[in-house]
Image (tube, rainbow, N blue to C red; front, side, top):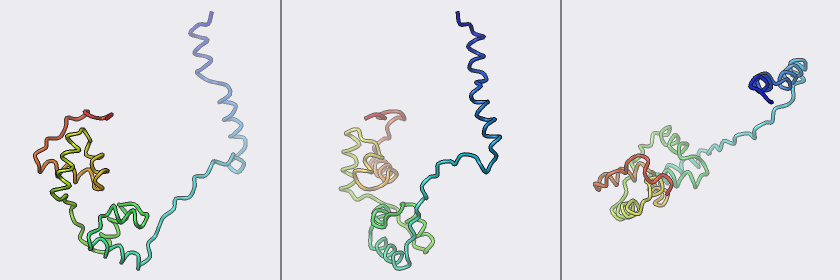
Length: 146
C-alpha cells in the first residue's frame, strides 16, 4: 500500500529538479541556455506634421479614439501628445439622441462598457449621461455574463 510518507517523499524534493539545478549551476552564466526573446515592442512616433494634423483634427471635432485609430496609436498616446502640445482637451458629452440610444441599450441589459463600444465613446461618458438622465446604476455583480 502506498502511504503518506511515500507520497510526501516523492513530491517534496524531486530529484530531477535538483539534478537540473546542479547542471545549470555547473554550466555557468555564459553557457546557460538562451531564453526565448520577446518580439521588440514597436513604438510609433509621429512626425511634426502628423502631430499638427492630429491637433487640427482634434480641434475640428474628432475624438481621441478616432484619432488613435487614424494614426494607429493608443488613445493614451493621443492624450499625451495633446497635453504636451498644450491643447486643452474637452470632456466628451453625448448629445440627446445618443443619450436616448444609451438609455435604450441600458434598458436592454447592456453594460456601460458595451454601450460605449456600440456608440464609439467611453464607459465613463455613458455613465455620466445615464446619471444625468436619472438612470440608476445596476448593483455590482449583475449582468456580468450577458
